[in-house]
Image (cartoon, rainbow, N blue to C red):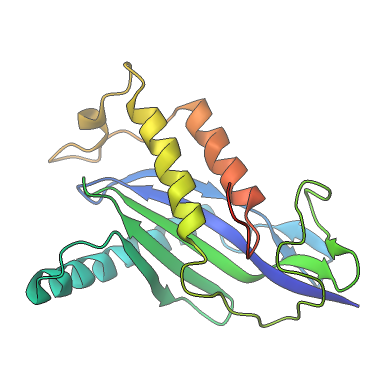
Length: 199
């Protein structure tokens, strides 16, 4: 009997001036066709990432008002629908990382572990017998945000990358076009399963 597990549907990086820097979209399991395809279009994911900016701003104001300061990990930003949820993290420089999780995006078998596009690359970190409808524990996304931040730091260490041209005060700015950064995002999105310790 096959069930489903959460998977990453989209990774987004938003600049300090709320401009989109990078979006990676991943395939999700479609039980009606037993195939893998994105659950939303690139435009829909772009709009979803933009909708998280209001939540970032509200939580930043709340942290400032209570004197707790910026915690970085904003956790669950909002549940989009019964299937998608957006999680967020903000660096001390104002760059925001957003992870959109598809709660039913990966097919799993109760006896043999995870089955899907990258079969054999993923371990059954969530354990056998996982059933549909499993939510994520608090802090489950920290490993993803840590890996995204490490990839972004490697990008910033590139002498040819100018962060100011990617986050100008006015205008749209440039998107991140680094192939290595894109590969890092792909590795993170495809490698994450609930319970994984590092990416």
